[in-house]
Length: 499
Image (cartoon, rainbow, N blue to C red):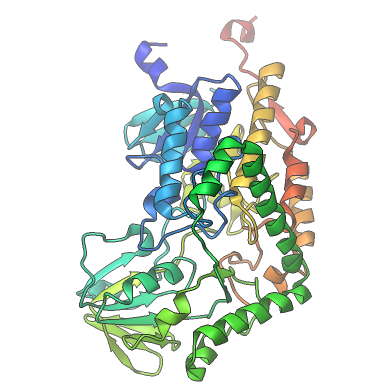
């Protein structure tokens, strides 16, 4: 192999430099692996926390838990971390733990295909071709913005953008802004921009259950204590984890959601004086069926004189506004989409081809599945981070990523000790695992709560969330279960083939 080709081959290729990709790189280095590359289309690490920089962007998982357990951060400034601090944390992790030399930033991976003869992955990137024995797809589910196909959108003469591609160069003061969507992003940026704009029209399809955020500043005394006595920081993290874990019970037994709904209704009554507006903002489904949101300033922002909440469906977009089902025209010069991401139809799935030449999307046929949320039959040596049924409605996905990283390291040790070229889940193991997940999902708030959410794929199946406690996922991933996998033997040397 020429030196140029050698530079283009790596044992492990990682796609994505967010929490998943950076965590993988750090754990690999800690385990003694050095032959790996991390590809990312951006010009810096950070993934979701690099790309989402809209006003007010922050995490809705408490700071002490939304970080790696193996890289403490006692310096969070608030109980819910703002985006700049999370992004800075990921950059610091990369700098201090030897990740930078492995990064290939500005390298967008267009396609990845398994070469069954060569027993390796072939990657097509914006900087040419690479090969790898093992592929780790860590692009994450909140990567590709989803913009609805509204009639007339192409004719709109104003400015239009998704919240994940915020136009920081656009001065919103004095503009008439339409915000489409009322999800986790919108409830953060609407209070920030409402005081600036001339008029803000919020188009709401379905109201969300909103609980008080109760964010607070972490004092300098607390931060000094966490640094001086690390066990206190570990205790704080453990307290947050178990407090969040208890909340899973209500998602699994929806009758218990009455307590949370009562809290949310009281929050709404205290925040919104107008009874007509309160009615518009009151959900009709069981809490938890859609993502539960946290905010102290969203409701007050909607009572501003320059803010209008519209619940009629959008029928079309015109050159200078939006028309709703009641025939009303809403003049606007700026459209901001807070409409989420492609989660159940991951664009990445259309770019990865398995042993039979079909893409992951073709295998899934509209409903994602994997073994342990990580590996997929027909895709040797492919490992997904935050793959199917690993999302959460109650706790930190960073915990789930760490569980998958431990499982991945177990798979690598198995490859190292057995000498096989590749592994993939047995079809029967994958079928049994996903059948058990579907049974566990029955009766949860996500399938019986009376709503249609982005958790559900076109078939109506919840293929995004973990239907249980996170510790139960840890139990399933703490050891690599080689018996559930088929081994792909190494290539027979040409001399032996003709012996």
